[in-house]
Length: 112
Image (cartoon, rainbow, N blue to C red; front, top):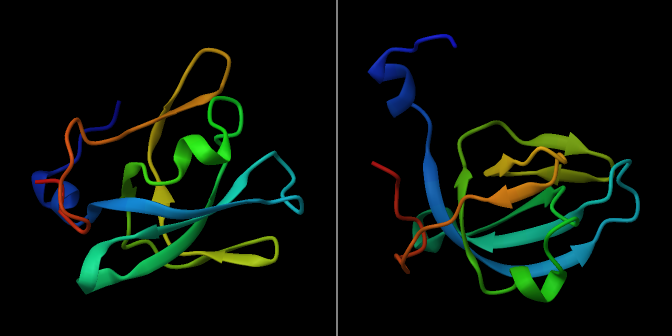
Protein backbone atom coordinates (compact mmCIF):
# COMPACT_ATOMS: atom_id res chain seq x y z
CA UNK A 1 0.00 0.00 0.00
CA UNK A 2 1.36 3.39 -1.00
CA UNK A 3 1.34 6.09 1.68
CA UNK A 4 0.08 9.54 0.74
CA UNK A 5 0.51 12.86 2.46
CA UNK A 6 -2.40 14.35 4.41
CA UNK A 7 -2.40 17.20 1.90
CA UNK A 8 -3.07 14.68 -0.92
CA UNK A 9 -6.18 13.42 0.88
CA UNK A 10 -7.52 16.91 1.53
CA UNK A 11 -7.56 17.57 -2.23
CA UNK A 12 -10.22 14.86 -2.76
CA UNK A 13 -13.74 16.29 -2.51
CA UNK A 14 -15.84 13.52 -0.98
CA UNK A 15 -19.39 14.86 -0.75
CA UNK A 16 -22.79 13.52 0.21
CA UNK A 17 -25.58 13.56 -2.34
CA UNK A 18 -29.07 12.13 -2.61
CA UNK A 19 -29.95 10.01 -5.62
CA UNK A 20 -32.84 11.71 -7.43
CA UNK A 21 -33.01 9.66 -10.65
CA UNK A 22 -31.97 6.16 -11.71
CA UNK A 23 -32.24 4.76 -15.24
CA UNK A 24 -31.04 1.63 -16.99
CA UNK A 25 -27.84 2.11 -19.03
CA UNK A 26 -28.21 -0.45 -21.85
CA UNK A 27 -25.25 1.00 -23.80
CA UNK A 28 -22.80 0.17 -20.98
CA UNK A 29 -20.39 -2.71 -21.61
CA UNK A 30 -20.83 -3.91 -18.02
CA UNK A 31 -24.34 -3.74 -16.49
CA UNK A 32 -24.80 -0.30 -14.93
CA UNK A 33 -27.29 2.42 -14.10
CA UNK A 34 -27.34 6.09 -15.08
CA UNK A 35 -27.66 8.00 -11.81
CA UNK A 36 -28.40 11.64 -11.02
CA UNK A 37 -27.64 12.88 -7.51
CA UNK A 38 -28.33 16.19 -5.77
CA UNK A 39 -25.21 17.55 -4.06
CA UNK A 40 -26.88 20.65 -2.62
CA UNK A 41 -26.96 24.30 -3.68
CA UNK A 42 -23.20 24.68 -4.21
CA UNK A 43 -22.77 21.74 -6.61
CA UNK A 44 -26.31 21.01 -7.81
CA UNK A 45 -27.47 17.85 -9.56
CA UNK A 46 -24.78 15.78 -11.26
CA UNK A 47 -24.88 12.58 -13.28
CA UNK A 48 -22.78 9.44 -13.37
CA UNK A 49 -22.95 5.76 -14.16
CA UNK A 50 -22.53 3.05 -11.56
CA UNK A 51 -21.95 -0.68 -11.84
CA UNK A 52 -24.12 -1.55 -8.85
CA UNK A 53 -26.80 -3.65 -10.54
CA UNK A 54 -25.77 -6.86 -8.74
CA UNK A 55 -26.94 -5.69 -5.31
CA UNK A 56 -29.29 -2.76 -5.95
CA UNK A 57 -32.52 -2.31 -7.89
CA UNK A 58 -33.37 1.15 -9.22
CA UNK A 59 -35.99 1.72 -6.50
CA UNK A 60 -33.43 0.67 -3.82
CA UNK A 61 -31.25 3.59 -4.92
CA UNK A 62 -33.82 6.35 -5.40
CA UNK A 63 -33.73 8.72 -2.42
CA UNK A 64 -30.63 7.11 -0.90
CA UNK A 65 -27.75 9.26 0.29
CA UNK A 66 -24.36 8.39 -1.17
CA UNK A 67 -20.72 9.43 -0.84
CA UNK A 68 -19.06 10.54 -4.07
CA UNK A 69 -15.88 12.11 -5.39
CA UNK A 70 -17.02 15.31 -7.09
CA UNK A 71 -13.77 16.94 -8.19
CA UNK A 72 -12.54 14.51 -10.84
CA UNK A 73 -12.76 15.88 -14.38
CA UNK A 74 -15.85 14.72 -16.29
CA UNK A 75 -15.29 11.36 -18.01
CA UNK A 76 -16.98 10.10 -21.15
CA UNK A 77 -18.60 6.71 -20.52
CA UNK A 78 -20.27 5.57 -23.71
CA UNK A 79 -22.89 8.16 -24.67
CA UNK A 80 -22.83 10.02 -21.33
CA UNK A 81 -20.40 12.22 -19.40
CA UNK A 82 -19.87 11.11 -15.82
CA UNK A 83 -19.62 14.06 -13.40
CA UNK A 84 -18.92 12.22 -10.14
CA UNK A 85 -17.55 8.91 -8.86
CA UNK A 86 -19.90 6.93 -6.66
CA UNK A 87 -17.91 5.23 -3.88
CA UNK A 88 -18.28 1.69 -2.66
CA UNK A 89 -16.47 -1.45 -1.62
CA UNK A 90 -15.89 -4.57 -3.71
CA UNK A 91 -16.92 -7.91 -2.26
CA UNK A 92 -15.17 -11.17 -3.17
CA UNK A 93 -17.71 -11.76 -5.98
CA UNK A 94 -16.83 -8.27 -7.39
CA UNK A 95 -20.26 -6.84 -6.54
CA UNK A 96 -20.17 -3.32 -5.09
CA UNK A 97 -21.56 -2.29 -1.70
CA UNK A 98 -22.16 1.47 -1.58
CA UNK A 99 -20.33 3.69 0.90
CA UNK A 100 -23.11 5.70 2.57
CA UNK A 101 -23.46 8.04 5.55
CA UNK A 102 -24.66 6.30 8.71
CA UNK A 103 -27.23 9.07 9.31
CA UNK A 104 -28.83 11.74 7.14
CA UNK A 105 -26.62 14.75 6.50
CA UNK A 106 -27.18 17.80 4.27
CA UNK A 107 -26.56 17.28 0.56
CA UNK A 108 -23.12 18.65 -0.29
CA UNK A 109 -21.64 17.90 3.14
CA UNK A 110 -17.92 17.23 2.81
CA UNK A 111 -16.16 14.28 4.38
CA UNK A 112 -13.71 15.82 6.79
